[in-house]
Image (cartoon, rainbow, N blue to C red; front, side, top):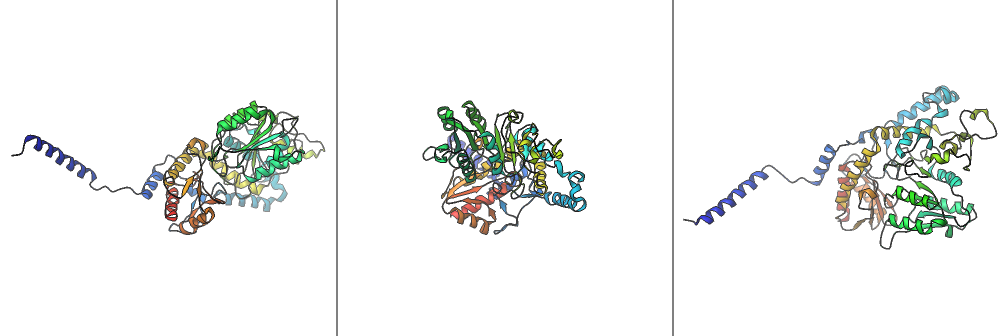
Length: 447
């Protein structure tokens, strides 16, 4: 006969084994792909992928691409072809009369984009206008707001600014007879870091602000995906006596913006990335109402920058309206505006707050899959509040890797030579399953 203590201990062990065995019966581990599909099925914002034309996969086992290049060119909304056809039909049926008699009269077509664009960037309607392209708009705005005088001449940008911005500010310095090498200040991250620290930007403006005429930074950095602290930097720049403008090429349609409330002086953005307006689509710009109501602000002018109530009097003297329209030059290209309008209607329906929340979920999921991999380094800030819908990966031979991602796995990303791969999990059409495909492709290629 066993001692009581041993019988009790044995009984406990047997009961534990029975419970563990019964609890596992019929269950199996959930693999990464199945987990991704479950996340898609349960997400608070169902995917709008069906509202876009997703290209076929160049390679791999899936019919459609996993498309992560929306920070270079967004996908085409399915409604775009119909919208363009309607404008072409009006042109065919009405010719010049379509300016006033078309189903969307051309003479004030840009007005259709005003309110949805204002909601997108957190502006008052009269503070925004759709016109031109991004760099053209930056030059027009700098013609008004970069006015170097005395010792206040410098322009502050980030060292990793998109090249077009570097070219634009350097040429503005030259235009004013200044030396770009001393006029343009390029803020760099600390040694061995990839991203600017907000406190370093604020510290520079506090120390050197009296010499700064213009702060012009990217709201979301094109290379690293870092989301700048736009309210804090704007406040510091204006407190230092500088004009503060923002390049929102990678921010508009990516993160919520409150340009009016943040007291931003001006901003410009393109619409062919996160805003899905098509290649070379008409851009947008913002001018704070304190400036649009100030008739003394200098500006380069054109026909469409005069008050529409007197535009067709054909007077030689301009009468600019008290709105951002005063910065327009020419009548807008209707066939280029139509896709932007179609896309803005989607953003209006879904809302930036819901899209931002899903963007954070997708980006965090993708980061959790990629971070453990050997052979790559995520250079985008780890804090979701400090990044947009983008992960930038430092990896050897980035260009070749991007080609293999597409050709072997149907995952479309882009490379910034020599060693950065950018992935943009755009919440309008990317899914958790797309993130799984991208991560799985990296695992296979890096191994």
